[in-house]
Length: 551
Image 1 (cartoon, rainbow, N blue to C red):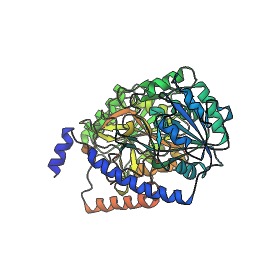
Image 2: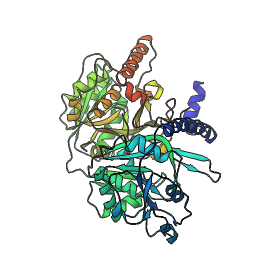
Image 3: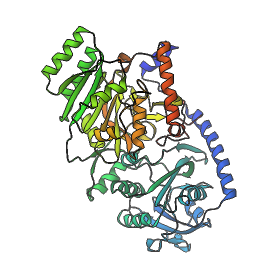
Image 4: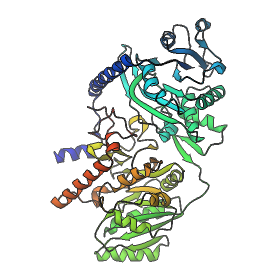
């Protein structure tokens, strides 16, 4: 079995996605369980009045299926039409009393449902979004979103989008929330009205939500993990075209460039930094001369961001050639400092020790088996980590055969934590472009991770007592999240991670016992995150690292 698995791994042909048939069976089961819950909710509670806004993304007539649904719904008070890019509206639409093109009459005291004219509602869509989202948060400006799917020619449901909780960096990169939003609270509704008067684009809702974030507008984001909207495919629409056009006329702290692949034309986001802080790159090692030489040489020779220092932490090396190389490296390279840590191996303690001697405002934790691929890796990561609301920033790490080793950590995988999209080909876009694009995760690996030194000290660094070897980076990231910050995976920082070379296996009773104790500690301390990772949908599997529907 080991030989067979290795052959599949090396082939670059297999990365664990279930067949369309299996996914269809799983989705059918998921819809059944959702329908039972939503039917029970419908029996007990009924939503109050709402308004709706329709973006016209196709010629609109009185026979439009969504329009018929909304007109027939008692709780829909008004339907406001917003024509995108000159889309046609037949005059027969205005025969209905509810239909209006002027949003000046929009009631700010009741929620507003944002839809596209090509959407369709499920039976429980409005009731669920009002009761589970808008009414629960009616005292706070809030935006409620839900999962979506599509209908084929036989009205069979397929292609579910099982979304995480609010993911601002995924929104900026892909515009993933672009319909099926319910907005509550006068400040938000006022802001929305003003925005839609100025912007008639198919991605208008997604742009508005992105700009709310960029302008630091305060709102509560609530995502409901139910498939409530049938949406049309957006693959032919261009998020890059929409956001780049908008940014030409607005002064924002970002610039965008188009990705060469991915559905919906997602973008690379680059944040504009006014400063170039000193980055302290901390690299612990025990011997491993060849790995260290490859790692440090690639950093020195390829990295475009130059304001850094390297702290090479020697943990009891006893190989004469390695020791000689480490000493000569410090003498030869002005960016490199050699630090001795003469105690037993404890990953958390080693890094905490090194931080105390670091001079940088930004700390970069880098394994000795890392090798730079993308020269702008540090430039991108620094641009993100210097944002006020960002804590930890992780990189895209590849095995030497160009398979994904790390692209964000998901809590709950295997009962603990695991790597998103592990073993996927490097070129793959991943689920909802999440492998291709920078987006938020609850944790990232410290094999290559940046954090501001201020944030590191605020949470007390790595846990030296309970997590000496494993999961210390996950624990650290979650402590940072608890300070109110986002962590993110930077898809544009790409490096090799020769993990199989440098890391030993848990192959002794003592190592296995230690590992099991660390898993148990993580499960006890972070039970809430493991049960429901906010950066991952509860409708997706936690048995595999492939974003398939749960079994």
